[in-house]
Length: 486
Image (tube, rainbow, N blue to C red; front, side, top):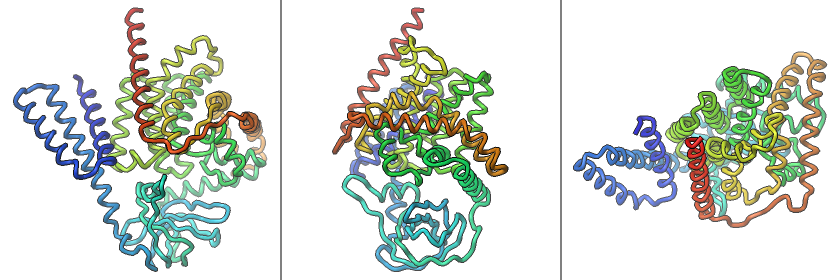
């Protein structure tokens, strides 16, 4: 058993410990500790190397439980809970870019002296920016737990423990945040302004969502069309979106004639420039790290090593924030999408051998389907619907997504310097976006395009992934036998 394989098992055990801690009651832990202690004594007496590794796996499982309990304890003992339901006055700094919507604006405020965050809902005006120091007076409320969704858990994973609705706000100081983050947000805002001046609606709204993950200018009718066709991910900075985008970008550069090393370096630079441009949200950073590790594994030609690197990256992220495992759908989607690319994409690529690989069609088809198959149960469980025509619409759109993204960055950047030049370079992107819009509109009108589910049980997730795991394992086993016989 190699050291890398042992580390892989330790990481999986740690992740499993966090999972158990998330679903089990604390009263069940003593039984688990007793079991670990018993196995440890047996391994000491038998002195078996495999048994020793197994014992340490159990110990890492226990560490995972312990780490998750620390995070839960922090939530349960947060100091803000002492003020729920009370009118309070405090000072804090706007910690994230304001989330501006049609009728409201949401501000994430880091409370001075506590280091904990609250989420404020306010009227659109007056406007505040990242780094503004504010004096706030209002009633602090606890996030609710609904029947099918825990808003409390959703916010807690980001360190947000309280809510205020339409409080009194007074600006005290400006530019109190991180200078680099402030610059990146300003750069993004200038790019958005340039984009909206150069390109008409609805193309500008789609490009804004594609580049920056902001779909505020996309109408509710079009959002529903995106849901029906399974293309909503192109209008949101999701883990799955960044994973697929990185995968397609790498292959797009290869198809242009770049060497593998050049494509690898360029893909990593472009994807992280993209993440920085959108303000570096934590979900995008995590997905970017995972996706770049995957294409590095592709470059070195060691897919099995790639899966271990992805699990190691997930472990490091969960050490920092163990609440991501069950509370962050973006984390789940990015992890599952990459595992699909690692284990299922090579199988489907061989299965689609008769499909021509012009414009990387076969490669993109197998990659897109692999990611979607692995993420399908999580999408059904969390959102209660799937698009039956999603594979087809994504096959028609995704091959051109990296090109549209790159062109969008180019013409929005040029538009800041020289508007006329930006307009000239926006034409190819305009035609691509028009093609996306027409395709989505056409397929959204098909009556059977969307299938909805109600009250999906966690047993569905368990059974689906159990069957999927067995099928993929058997298919990979057959491929290895074919290779050995050849």
